Amino acid sequence: MWRLPGMPSVIILTAAGFAGFAVLLPVAPLWAVQGGADEAGSGLVNGALMLATILTQGFVPSLVRRFGAASVLGTGLALLGGPSLLHLFSGDLWWTLVLSAVRGVGFGILTVCGSAAVARVVPPVRHGAAIGAYGAAIAVPQVLLISIGPWLAEAIGFWLVFSIGSLPLVGIAAAPAFGRAWKRSDVDTGLAAPEDDRSNRRNVLPNGLLRPMFLLLGVTLAGGALITFAPQMVSTPVVATGALALLTFMAALTRWGIGGFADRHGTRPFLGPLVLLTSAGLVLSAYAVSDPTSTRMVPFLLAMALTGISYGGLQNLTLLIALKAVRPDEYDTASAVWNMGFDAGTGIGSILIGSLAAGLSFSPALLVAAGISLATLPLSLMR
Image (tube, rainbow, N blue to C red; front, side, top):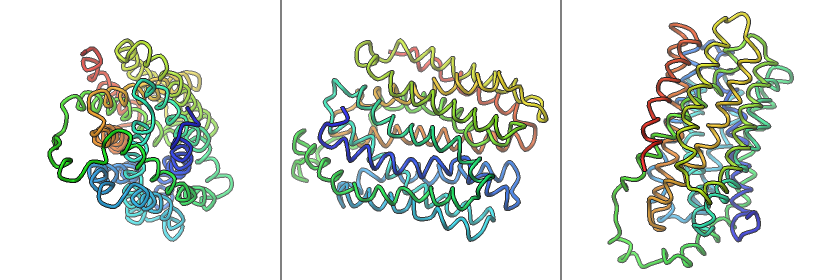
């Protein structure tokens, strides 16, 4: 899988891009708090990132058709990594929000291009395994950097974290090879048709994409809330570091491993249990942080592990559902819609939980998130 034509470039630029994204996910809100923001303000940081991401993703397919995959992706990586060091100029909330929005544009480009490329360069019968490999390229940087980012900021300095956040610039070197693989896939699948033929193709949103998008939104709302606020909702930094490492590790393991099972058995047997696991993890985390001065460490770590399993598994399965719902010439549309569901959930989780925590506390806020995730259960039972 890793050696298929086009996959090495996809893996390299994905890993570089998500390294820069992951390390700032819990640290940029902390930087805003250093600048004087409260919980609601710090929650807006990742909310702005995801809002800009979502607003960008819908335009990526047309941008790729107009300017080419290599140029669009190279620009996206520059926008994602370039602003990172600019955080050092100011910790004011408005400046952090501006930089987060710019990074969100770049992240929107990266996510749509990456998942669409995986669908293009790998035969459909192996999409589950390919999504697992792509998910590993996303998850390994998250395992290493989401958990250690807050510790690096506190122990060494925010300057180091912001330096790591510029790693997407390294991925630009793989963009030309990525563009060549994209063009080859167009030829192999018949997508490189004349513009007149392409204009006759369906230009509406396939109905089958709404179900995986909302399923994904339910679990990424949970993941976004826990990743953003774990350093703020627990009483000791060591617990936060371990919890984030556990969540991202379990997500990486599940997202990588579940693809092969889905190729053999389909997605439906796994969806309902994973939705229930999301809600259970959030309820348990609410119990663990109910005392702000003394986190119940074992329940909190267990909660993060449970949520991590569903967080990784549903990412793989919902992307599989989205790809099966469309024709090959609509893979980029499926990728855009899937990523919009992912990032909408992450952004809503950050803003909603931050706002509720500012007025109440983190414990009831997490219970609200559990209810929202549970509301997606009927979608998991549909054929």
